Length: 93
Image (cartoon, rainbow, N blue to C red; front, side, top):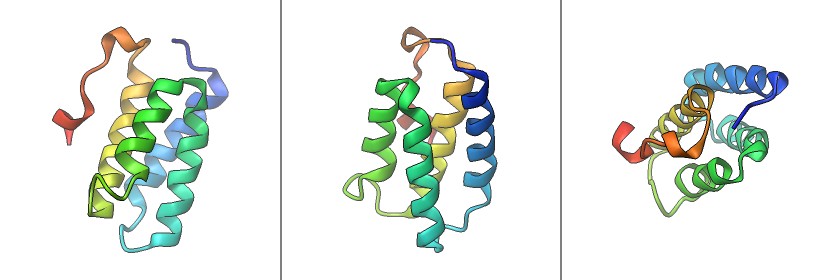
């Protein structure tokens, strides 16, 4: 799946932002998570996985784990063209 240029720029910004957000800053974490979820709307499968792994408080207890997982998913979205190249995200955390 091709990512629009503007979306690629937004994903790159979110990767940087996610790498610098302090996990104890819950307000910043929430803003980043919401922006990431909205940015991933171009790929409903990635958006759903992000929602499940990074927005659901039932999956991971620590915000640092959710951040790392989310940043990893964003990097994966930039480097993969389609779902057939998907590498399970859990193995990358």
